Length: 128
Image 1 (tube, rainbow, N blue to C red):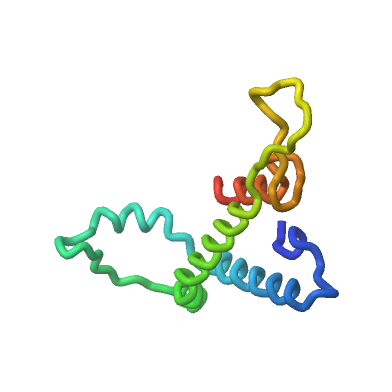
Image 2: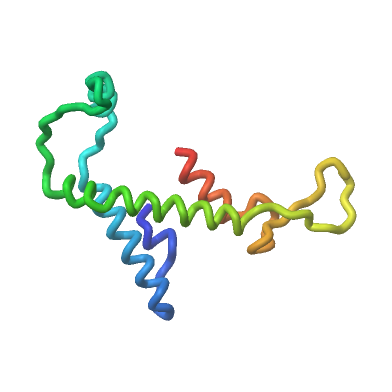
């Protein structure tokens, strides 16, 4: 599913449109780059005494574009996820419950029943 389908359309709010465009650009750069899964397992065995792997690699323009901003973008995404998890956390909903050991909880931010849709989405995305 594309980011724009997940976030919805942002005709009214320029900040939402700007955020959607940025997320779509990060996703597009990520999709164009080459996965390093199999290479990284092999390269880990080649670490020398100084803690480096001397390599010669063939990188495409898309790979270089992705690698140039990947660190900063991952830090920004981790910060975003941490802030959202901090905002969307459970709290006692109060009221009478039939099971006092498992009281009904609601999200502090959106007041949905816990776990709220925002927390479930973050958990699903990060848990992959």
